[in-house]
Image (cartoon, rainbow, N blue to C red; front, side, top):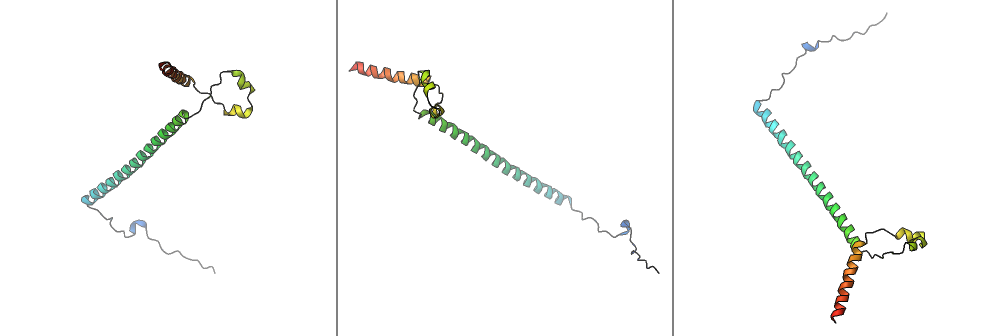
Length: 124
């Protein structure tokens, strides 16, 4: 004798008792909408502030790097190599230290200083 297990009788979904959906009034809906909008605006303002700060920081950093490089170049001690054969005689370590620069500005500056020095010597 086979015992069959019967499933309990199911009710149809449509037959189940359901609560009515909670209706919110128009004023409450509008208040929620306004609140959501203000939260969205605040969030946008915060993001904009962070983005602006980041941009300012980036610009400040670039300016500092540029200024540092400029100051470094100003404070360099430069020795002009007029004889290119000297470069061929240099050792590897010395060649690594050599850097090309625009020396025209430095030469003009030195000539002006020499010219002023000679003019002062002529006055005496």
